Structure formats: structure tokens, C-alpha cells
Length: 192
Ligand SMILES: CC(C)(COP(=O)(O)OP(=O)(O)OC[C@H]1O[C@@H](n2cnc3c(N)ncnc32)[C@H](O)[C@@H]1OP(=O)(O)O)[C@@H](O)C(=O)NCCC(=O)NCCS
Image (cartoon, rainbow, N blue to C red; front, side):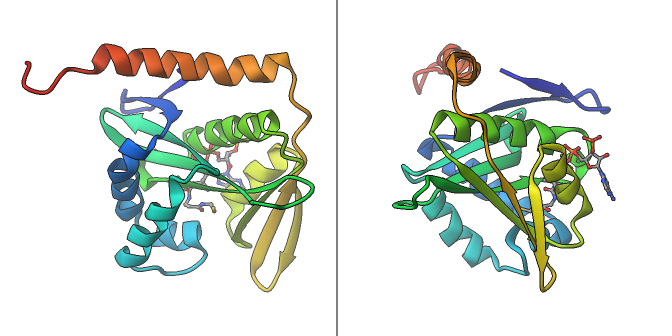
């Protein structure tokens, strides 16, 4: 599994989130400071909005990667495939808790989301952010997105390359690694 070592020596590990991780994802989004929450959702949203949002997040057409510090999700990248869209299109969004920002997690999550989109035949990957969100704009451009700004909002559009055996291998090796780690960490309830 990819890991990033932060300056405070905490190691952050990235893996896919599953429906059983919904509470951890919800807690992560609720911990975002007001500015990050505003940037993530394109405006101020309530805790109840986040509850509802998380319920729709772990659907079959959504893939989420979470960055873990210990047992907490501290950052996440979401890929939502737009059902019925042709050519195949998906939206993506990112959230990194303030103490973990600017250490490469957003870049790592975006890289993984682009690979996941490639492997699912996505032709257009779009991302919305506020136009003053310099970090997100910079990351999008770094991954060769085209930016279009209207009324204070920027839409970044990327065209992921077609999948190939290497892109499959990249995703599934990480998947296998994280599944194996979870199996090794799993304990039947009642045992110490
Ligand atoms: C935007 C966000 C996802 C980026 O993740 P991150 O982990 O902080 O970003 P990273 O450390 O991976 O990368 C930041 C990049 O922006 C650059 N950067 C930082 N501040 C910048 C600024 N003011 N102007 C331009 N570039 C800037 C960094 O140098 C780095 O570039 P590099 O990789 O070429 O060195 C994260 O800050 C976040 O969650 N913010 C709140 C929610 C949000 O804005 N979500 C996006 C909308 S969906």
C-alpha cells in the first residue's frame, strides 16, 4: 500500500474504503475545518448534509480511497461514475484534513483516482472547485487537466489515458496488499 511519511513522523497509508468504513469516512468529513469543508462542498454545509452525503457515497458506482493515520481516515478522494453518461464520465472530489494538507496526500489520491478512472474506461473525469482554490487548481493542472472558470467556480476536465495491463496491475496490487493487511489485522470479536 502506498504510504506517506509526514513531518510529525506519523505514517499515512492509503487504501480503498468499503461500506463498512462509512462511519470513518463520515467522521473524517465532519472533522474538516470550516474553510476546508466549504472548499470541499463548494459552500457551507451542515453536519446533517454530510450525513446524507455519506449515505449516497458508498454506492456501487462510487469508489473512495481513504488515507489512514492509525485507524482514522484523514484524507479521501472520491470517484463518482455518472450512470448512463456517454462517453463514460465521472466526477471526482478530494478532502484532506488541515494538519495533513500540503504533504502530498491530495496528489497521491488524485493519481490513484486517475488510475481507477482509466481502468473503468472513463473518458472524461471532471472536478469542481472554487476558483480561488489554488492548491486544487495546481494539482489539476499538474495532471494535465483543462480548467474553465465561471462565476467563481472552476471546472477541471481530464482525459485519462486508456487502460493497459500496467494500470490494472498498479490498482490490483494495491488492492491485494490492503486486503491482505486487513485480513492480518482482523480479529474475531471476543478474542484479545
Ligand atoms: C485541495 C486539497 C485536496 C489538496 O491536497 P493537499 O494534500 O493539501 O495537496 P498536496 O500536498 O498533494 O499538493 C499541493 C500542491 O499545491 C501546491 N500549492 C500549495 N499552495 C499553493 C498555492 N497557494 N498556489 C499554487 N500552488 C500551491 C503545492 O506546492 C503542491 O504542489 P506540488 O505537488 O507540485 O509540490 C486539500 O488541500 C484539501 O482537501 N483542501 C480542502 C478541500 C478542498 O479544497 N477540496 C477540493 C475541492 S473538491
